[in-house]
Image (cartoon, rainbow, N blue to C red; front, side, top):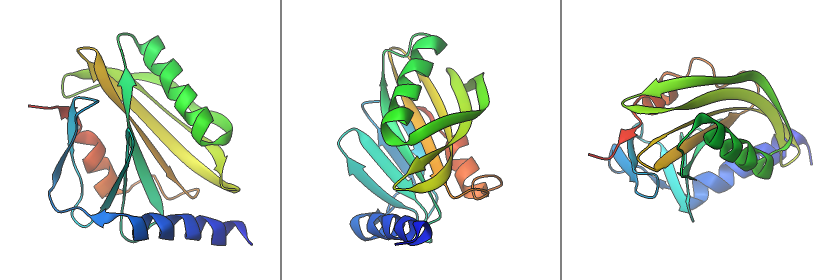
Length: 162
């Protein structure tokens, strides 16, 4: 089976198992954050992971609760642990940089890795406050992450639950 067919099968499985977003604002209570999911995107919760993807496929974002994100070093360790557990041959292409967003602090980085035999680009941002936080890990075929306006709007909307 070709790599592209396997990737398409993975995306199709997500689409068949998920339901369309009915409300724009979603909360991740374990992470103590909320974010605005683009209209028509699909969501699927599996344990502590909430996966969000457009109906057309091509990319996905996994929201994962962080434990005690008190320093950027702790956040980075948790993030790299999750990435190494989710991808094979993880390689960072844009090193860790500190970020702040909507009163939350953390780190962002980008890279590549293998998942289900397919080379994917990934990005990760991890932010938190008050002992809780969230990692948002996005993945797509090479060249499909940059410039996605709906994705950027969703990521910029991450904020503490009010």
